[in-house]
Image (cartoon, rainbow, N blue to C red; front, side, top):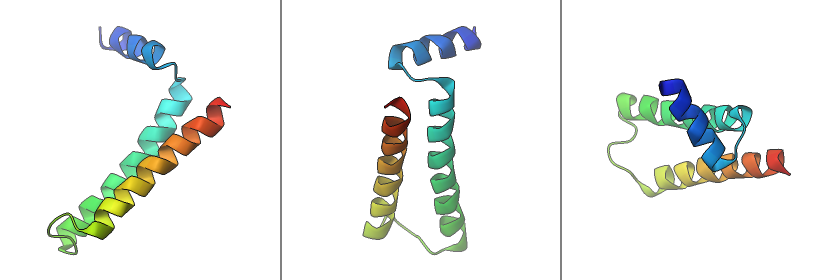
Length: 70
């Protein structure tokens, strides 16, 4: 059942599994980095630099998808 739902989701977005995997990898790396910073106490709350970092990661993921689909 889970595999069928995943295939339907991929078909709905029009992305290949490679594109989705690459995007998840990029976003996952950013989230792990942020988690490490939070655990070390470098980030107590979301500051401006953290928001910018997340935005840049999302932008990079979108650009990677756009380049791979072109």
